[in-house]
Length: 266
Image 1 (cartoon, one colour):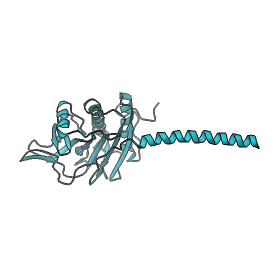
Image 2 (cartoon, one colour):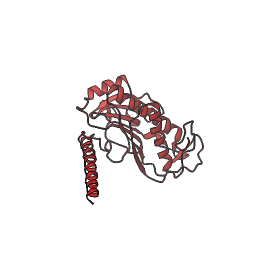
Image 3 (cartoon, one colour):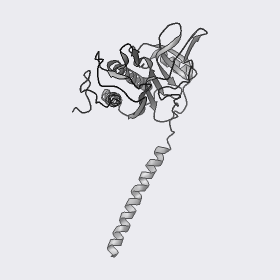
Image 4 (tube, helix red, strand yellow):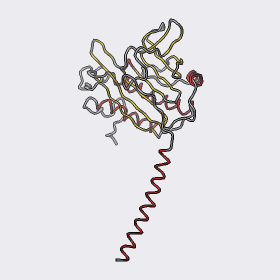
């Protein structure tokens, strides 16, 4: 009996020592400054309010969005910065190295606003509605919205899959590169993505209008942590994003779509 009691005491001591180490690690992790994420406003896809001007070039030329719908992507540091970036710093870096856009083209126009620097894709050169925009905030967060990825025309409400996936790939890759090379913020990053105002839309592969990929939810959001910023790591994150959009329809993403493998393949 004395031997059993001694063994139990020894095991208790080992358990307490192991637990103490774990608690120290947890305490150190929680002491890291929490990242002050920019709050969404009227939908998960937007950071701006109704009618807010996002880019003002002169008294007659300003740009914004007409609603809070669209596909979005957010790339954020995991911890608060030691100091926020100034608007001038962000605008200067944006002029030298553009971040990504959720649009068919990646040119855009770099500008600035009270929130930091912004890259816009306008419908007209004389002001008005934006097709897409990407904001880099003072806290280092980059937030893209692609309004024109939601197509509403004579064929119905459509989300072209090739355009969606291509623009998402370009935006994520460019935003990660901007965080690393310009802002000098290392990985890991938090990636949030989703869409708003999408009920009744259908994912369309190439020109096949008649397909089963109808979306029945008004909005969705998902997230992941990107620690590996190699091409393989970014591709793995992209695949998760692509497949999340297809899950909305109740159907899996077709294998090897556009030459990009599915997670079910070896």
